[in-house]
Image (cartoon, rainbow, N blue to C red; front, top):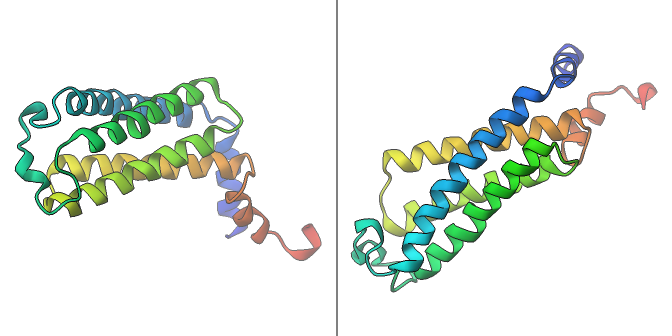
Length: 161
């Protein structure tokens, strides 16, 4: 990485407040929606929020209970946890945001493949997950935490190590 770009990223990293706020908002938005959608699937696994069970044709699921459980726990509770750690600026927050952001993107891809459809909401949530992953990487880079620290170290000359 060019030293000017590295210096710019580190200089911007001195004030990370905006990054943490954006991450918290993204995580809370996703988390609340996932709790609502996952909860609906848990309470009514045959017809949650009007989604017909025929959507699951060709998938390994006979109803929405297991997908709802995954959505509620991993995406919903996980995103809320990552949002709280963003507000608290926990030392491991970059990892929590990265894991939940990647989980969201994987969830969206698998969902689109299973139902054989891509809707605007899929694209929106995938982009939210991507934004979260980029912001999480920025936190890891500024804090020089693994794996982002590998990019930081590789940009130094051997005499600077």
